[in-house]
Length: 404
Length: 116
Image (cartoon, rainbow over all chains, first blue to last red):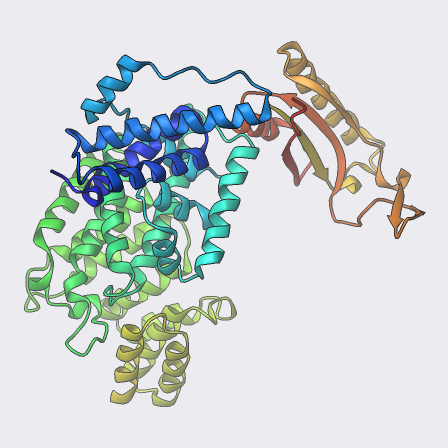
């Protein structure tokens, strides 16, 4: 029999989503589900259910109806909610396939543009993926009470402002899908930023693989959703190669492709091909294509695909001017056209605006070093080190600086 | 649910061109309000005169004091509002996007407190 943990992991999001869609109340759904889990922990050891997910769903539904009844009785304002239909309950208790899949609705609710951007991803991870507040707080590097408050405020806004629990109509579809994708993208960037990935982000990155898999299942006709799922797979495939023996970051071009997870790369390739067949190019497809280009490399003996990378960055810039893309492009440009050309490009960017942007200083430092401008390179490394997001990046930068 | 759609614009937009811009925007508001009223969505609303006509009554420590001018000096001022009855926030936001603005501006969408 499946354990409670396993069931919660596999079916929790779906159960909470179904409850939320039925009762249009996130707090109620969350609370009823938590109580059902507590009940399961007490009852299952002695009486294991036939279908654990169905048991949890039926129990949580009953709890939710109880809670509504009690609330109404207290308020004496609304008539009692109807009794649950016994026959439906019986069915549900025996077959998890009868739990309606409302996860897409729930994702759209959590990622509604009316919800504060910094709360959207957290809410999605909490309700759809079932991460604890503590886990989410750690992943977002904020204190647990602050995260709890952020989630509470977001749920209150959704309830009080009348955010719809319906899947958006065709007019709002592009905007809402974009809100979902950009939310998850920010969430994933958080996980990926930490090259070590050993700490709190390891499990979180796995959640992103699951969540994007759900998304491709629910939005099979959205090329950008498919591309984002591909991107997460390509990036996760490289995780085993991102650190050296001392725990320092290894830049992409120096990573040993033999360490990359080929199964994840194959999944990424397949998703990206599906996206391409839908014939609507978008920025996430271009970014995923960048990852795919790197993934073609089989060993360090093969030359890095700099010209393909450069071409893809140019396409991305056609899409939208973005200083972060320019900085990454400069790395490829240095290989294709030499460090002087790349440095000129970097120096033309808005320096003051990028003053606190670590990659700007790291790339600039490397280009200066290659041009023999030692003092300027040292200063740029110092700035980059001061801004380094994690110990792995820091160690790598310190080493590069020491080599000067 | 009912929502108040509060319109914030720089009222200077409508000054000093013989009121032509103002006439145009009023006509656009009337068209939208007429459409919403015909659908039974519009529950109220109005345009407001400019803030140089405003008087603010402030209560501090039990005392009332009057001053000439709006509650807050800002680049954009509350210029009017719609009160609409729609199923959910998305519907209210869709109407907010259709509210005519003379230039840059903002529409704040606020749910109205439910009486029942």
